Length: 176
Image (cartoon, rainbow, N blue to C red):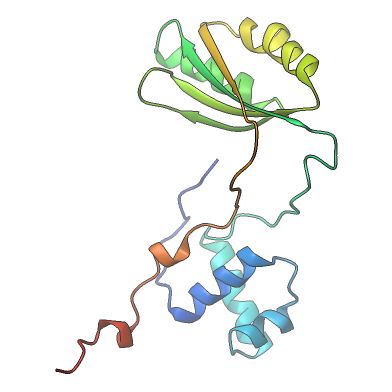
């Protein structure tokens, strides 16, 4: 679940470079990261710690290959609740949070209340998930599933270029 940063901090160009490099490869050693962003190791480590403490870096993970591990079925499930009251929303969210096959869950606007992305080994596992678990959550009114046939794009890195401040050089107006 995305978190709000613990305390707002100002980021300079070097901080943005650190974030971008760590998104690309979190296994970089501090020495390699420092070299990549033109810092010495000690100030680089201090910056990383500051970014972690501010909540901008929430954790480090390893991304596994789902197909190689036998998780061949990716399904998007739209869930509509019988009533959109706080208790029903809380009950649903608590139940979903416990399920490892639910990769993502979003509270939605529009025709459905929630959108889930579920990964399972096969159609039988999906059936068990839906029949034995999802449909039994109190308040669930309607389910609609769509199988992903092919993953066209998948990324975990956030689009930092869209939020990073414009550099001084880019702000200058061209002569002429």
